[in-house]
Image 1 (cartoon, rainbow, N blue to C red):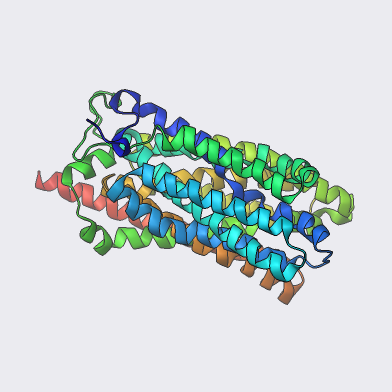
Image 2: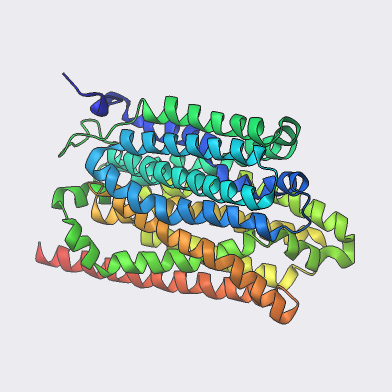
Length: 440
């Protein structure tokens, strides 16, 4: 009899994993709206400063991108996704309990403890599920990893469409305790019904019986070939490709996050002389919404392109090259009348969104899906490092120079480094392929 931990969707439903992962991601991506709860807390504790509450976002981000994947990835490869999803649900429950304690606190000295602990538990839960979700999806879809992770990654980019209105309108009306009960209730239900119950890992040595049909003369996917080589984890961590990928992700994400975390300030600085500050802020919000939609569309498109080109390095070189062109264009036009900066921003969102699933699918494509949990956790941790560094870089440059133009140059430099790494690894990939063909 199959144990509970090994029950779930199998071979005949493996194509559903990316879509269920997207639903889970859309219901659980709480970190994107965490800062929207600051005004509610400021009102409750009669405080005028934002800084004391911002530590909550830091706790969510750090536990989400670093602590959660450090534990979730290896645990997934050993025990399967049900355990990591179950732990994530427990963490969300503990976080909710902390928010009720926060609601009952009379002073910020008491409330701060519950805010920090609750934020950390929420971030840790997000990190546990996110490091397991894409990895499990890739394990079941080694024949088209890019497509699978691209669909899977749609979820977090869709989350703000429901989470932002709830955070800004509904939660303040309900109050801290009941409001967070609604938010975490949606997350727990989504994770339980669409993640915990249906998800499981394939059996050791499993291969798809119905792989994606290739055109005549086309080869297997990179992940399938890597699975056949059965690359041990010790060899993976000795490979320079893994560290090149990590450096590439960090540099790209520093550039992208410096841009997105300071977007409204860019618009205020560049457009206030034409539109006025209020109109510039409104324009940035509109462009951000359009950018989110474009970002969502870019994820599956570039994921499928990776499968088609059979090279994440080649796909990333294309994405980074277009990203650099858009950033350079932005540097020239961000103080020009509105339409040009809007076009540049939307293009940046397109390629920024497109880079995410390709970067996440790079390691499983190169080293196989057997250890996807650990491999994708490396990518998430690299991303987390950038999340911590990027806001500091942007604000420090602004404080030193009084303008965000310097931050824009840092973005361009970061993406250029990523582009150089991708091009270098692509050339090495071509050389290896030629050498292999010569030997055969």
